[in-house]
Image (cartoon, rainbow, N blue to C red; front, side):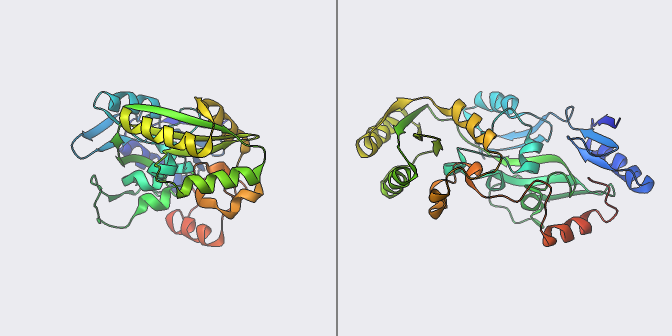
Length: 294
């Protein structure tokens, strides 16, 4: 049975990985695989929140629901909405974002800075706490999707967005991929700004609008006139569908216009789990030459 080690500080993580490198012990972060499994459950604090700058710095173990409840008191949010309730560190390591990425971007776009612990125990930081930032190498982008194999994500500085006054969704029935593609093209060409556009397959196109009450009402009416459909609230079902796709592409015909379905990472062809490109393996070897992180 692996030993589970719950970190209470970044320094503890550095000491743990330094010992593992010296002893030849395999370590995995928040998942089985290593002789030692690192948990960031206790690294769950909001370290800074600059409301005027729409930024915050948090420890990697804080869950999205907890963070967004705290941010909502100030009328702000972190615009990530993956299924379940992952930690910020998990969102970075697995590159999670999901429907709202259509408007706000992926976790790569919202990550301003990061503090990580490398396989030999070195603590490294890059980026900063402001949106316009050019400090050092952009380790944050590199660590997005790294699956914990480049290092332990300990802290993150994040870009926030104002909490919308209201959210409303147009739900349109579609009969096949060709019709869905046609409606998506019409939506793309219209003067509309949906926060998410997704397909609940088979048969449903969903477009989320959010913001001020007046603006959302105008956008929803224009979208209904263009596409038809009725108002609904399908997002829990959408997320469940996306989670079940497991990276597979359920309707190949829509990949001709990938920018229209970028609301769902489930519709992007991905490498099989555990398979890394030769370049990624070279990067991993440079960051963790002793192969401590598994």
